[in-house]
Length: 216
Image 1 (cartoon, rainbow, N blue to C red):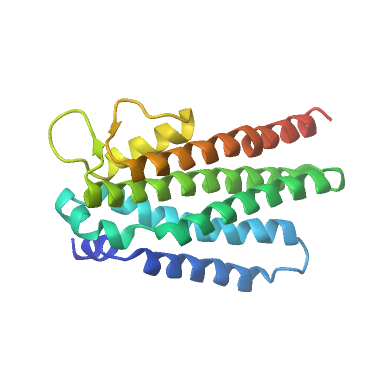
Image 2: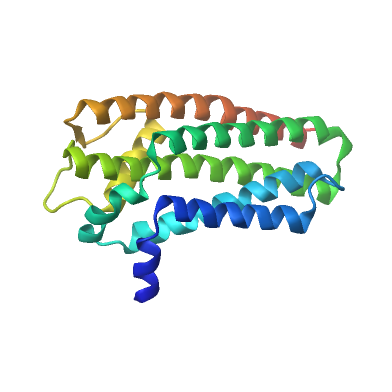
C-alpha cells in the first residue's frame, strides 16, 4: 500500500527524471553509435517511454478520486512538457520509419525482423504516450475548471479521463462527454488535430513500408 501511495504521489517531473534515467542507462549499456545505431536509438526511446507508461498506468489503475483531486496538478505535464512530448514522439516515430526504410535493403532475416519489431514498438509506445499524457492534462483541467460533464453518477477517476483522451485519439471527436469550458475545448481541438496527423501519416506510412518489405 505504501509503495502504491508513493508512486501515485510522484510528480510528473519525478517520473520524467526516472524515465530519462532509464533511457540514459540504456544508451550507456548499448553504447550508441557503435554497431547498430538505429536499433539503439529506438531501444533508448522504448526504455524511456515504457517507464513513463508504467508509472502513468499504475496511477491510472490504483489512484482513488480523492487522491486524484489532490495530485492532478502535480501529475499534469504542463504545456511546455506536453509540447516537448509531441515533438519527441513525432521525431522518434519518423526517425524509426526513415531508418527502417533506408536500411530495408541492407538487412535480412532476423536482423530485419528485429528492426521491424523495434519500429512498430517505438511508434506504438509514442502513440500511447501522447494520449496518456493528454489524459492527465484533462484530469487537471477538469478538477481545476470543472469543465467536463461525464454521464452517470460519481466523480470521474483517471480511467474516465483515459476514455475521453483515447476516444479523441482514435476518432478525432468526443463521444458522450460534454465539454463545458473553453480552455478544455481548445485543448481537445489541438489533441484531435495532432491525433489525425499522427494516425494518417506516421501509422499509415509505417504500415505501407512494412507491407512493401514483406512483399519483396
